[in-house]
Image (cartoon, rainbow, N blue to C red; front, side, top):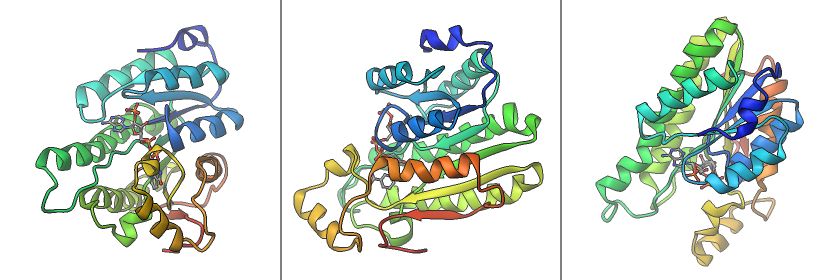
Length: 252
Ligand code: NAP
């Protein structure tokens, strides 16, 4: 599904940044930051259609694309749609993520599959974007939003922490594969950021998290987006690395 602006701006020559999960939280902040840097934003969503469309309407030339990252058919359709409406992807921000909180003994296999299927979809989407757009262009930036908990672990989040650790390994391997093509791949690993994802945490868990953060506050989505914008537009010799954005709680 595409907003009318995608059709209306078919001749737009600006570089395109595709942000997955752009309708909420950190993804929305990344869309705003990249639009401010002059990108035309392809704002991906799965279920947050209303907020995605509202944000797309605010950002000059932005358009929405829908896909469930759990489905390769859905990803193929998204790639076809971007090819038709914009014809290029210069920056890919793999921001979408999913979490279910439960200890190992009660975590259901379906929950494990739902969390890890986003990682599979991220790999597949990246492969298709590199193949269809970046490899031909001989340039590109891929920015993966991982997490501090992929490094520290976090009780009750085994599939999520596995996925985030794997995403950083994906970053390092892919950066080595694509460096010769000037396609740069990096991770941004947020600490605890004030979004709906952290709002869902019980009050006592939030309090114990705050005790672990030297800056004594949660981060803001725009503080993560700032680093994403840097990697998308500057940082031309930063490759295969993980930039931690966590108020000092972990340095890698
Ligand atoms: P959020 O608002 O829950 O964002 C998650 C996004 O992922 C949503 O926009 C959602 O899209 C998308 N998504 C989930 N499952 C999907 C699927 N199967 N297919 C396609 N899209 C899917 O949370 P957030 O805090 O902004 O998180 C953004 C990223 O930052 C995530 O990767 C998260 O793991 C990471 N992160 C967050 C924190 C934090 O403290 N908040 C810390 C470290 C890392 P729809 O809403 O459209 O379904």
